[in-house]
Structure formats: C-alpha cells, structure tokens
Length: 131
Image (cartoon, rainbow, N blue to C red):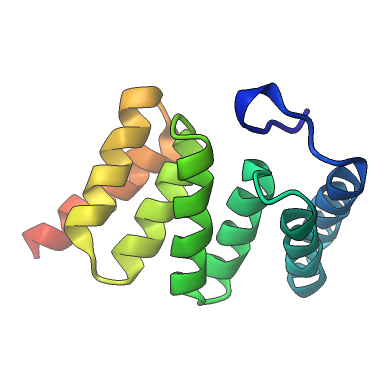
C-alpha cells in the first residue's frame, strides 16, 4: 500500500506509474523506472514513496544532488521514514557532507534502532573519519 501524508491516497494514475516504476526497477531498467517515478511525482507531488524510490535510483546513477532533493522532499512529507533518512545519508556521505550524513543515519536509527542500512552507513562514515 502506498502512503501519502495525512492519510491521503495517491491519484490512481500516480499509483499505476509508481507500480510500473517498481516493476521496471526490478527488471533492471533503471532509466524507464526513473521516468515512471517522475511521472508519479508529477501526478501526485506528495507521493513520498515515489520520491524515495526516485531518489534511490538517482543516487545509484550518480545524480547525488537530485537524490538529495528527492529524499529531502520525501522527508518533509513523511519525516518518520527511516529509508528516506538512510538514502539521504548515503547521498550526503558520497557528496562529502559527513556531518549531515551522520545526522540522517542517526535519525533513521532513532526511528528504527535496528535499521540495517542506517547502521551500515553510520559504520562506513565512522570508518572514513578514522582514516
């Protein structure tokens, strides 16, 4: 089930585009998946999950600023999302913004103390600082 802030339901077209994006991403077609997520966001700008998935794809494709923008907006819409905090932390870490990355990893862990990717990100960050 997709979630929007305040219990809103996304427009059916946005949901269909989001689901297509998930399918395309699973099939390894990142470019078309990103297009589908962008279309879902265009149809429903408050569709946080579409923004989270788009940000993740952008980060994996090297568009760190695009990823940061999408994840920041997803968190504005849904501040308790540990996945968005972690993806944002990863993009910030890759951008060399270590203090900002740490803040987002720690935020994810406050929400879910056992969130594996946030724990991994924080460990990687601490390793970088020790070098």
